[in-house]
Image 1 (spheres, chains in turn purple, orange, red, yellow):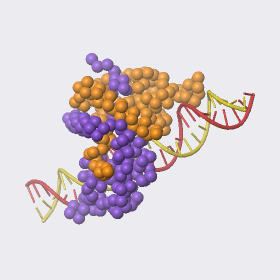
Image 2 (tube, rainbow over the protein chains, first blue to last red):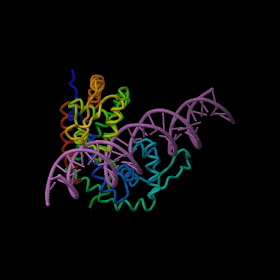
Image 3 (cartoon, chains in turn brown, blue, purple, green):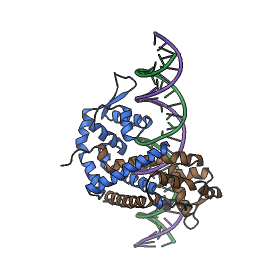
Image 4 (cartoon, chains in turn brown, cyan, purple, yellow):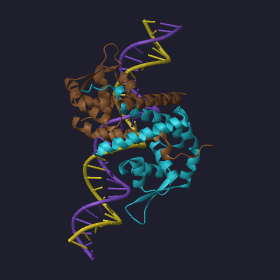
Length: 146
Length: 146
DNA sequence: CCAAAATAGATTGCGCGCGATTTAATCGCA
DNA sequence: TGCGATTAAATCGCGCGCAATCTATTTTGG
């Protein structure tokens, strides 16, 4: 029925590969800021809305606490944020940016723009691709559950 | 000039996220075969052409020897392949599938098909997306070098 | 022919990313 | 009210993925 797949026939490999390429592109841009690529993504989220709980951040990034807790602890050690137990619910830990963490947004201002330029895509093309990717992700997650 | 980016405005995040979703989808399919997702990708390549050197595999997958050597050693320990020094050039190590490694292709036959189905994309849509992703990867790698 | 440069892999240390498990707090329901 | 179930984080072990470094082999120029 189905022929044995080749690597280049696999959509997943193109995603895998593009993801590694983004990581490699970000590295020299984020190194001067002392950030890794996943740390940057977490900060982008916190710059949008401060004081989120670990699981809220995990929900947005699609990461488990087993990944996030150490990542956030490293950002805390770096002085960019503080991790405080929620008084309303002592199970939760809320993440608050420090002044230094907020200031970093200014220093990181050029990064996203630089990456956007490197994609070689126009704004409309990028949006079209994002729409397709979001649908793809959604389909994969649905299939995974069932 | 540029507004501070949001997470959902970042194309890289959609790629990052789709990549994680693929990994999660593959896991229950590959666990019974005793394979991880990157190991599966390496095997797909070897099923296409046996006897490749570590750097040839690395070139195709976009991985360094520091990633591949341990991965291939694990597959060797699992009895799926052998790593043999090339007599023509003793610096090179060539990878040869064992009978067990070749047999695994049959057992893994359904995996790619199942994943392809889970994407919810028609063959033509998948190809269009792959084309766009290959162009994207290429643009990112060009930007990275310069 | 031989020493310096280049190349192929391997090793090390670090940061993800996850499943499995643990601990602590809250919820639900009798 | 109280006790079992649920939820939130944290911890642990493992496998990537990489930069930096090391070793061994081959290539190149003098």
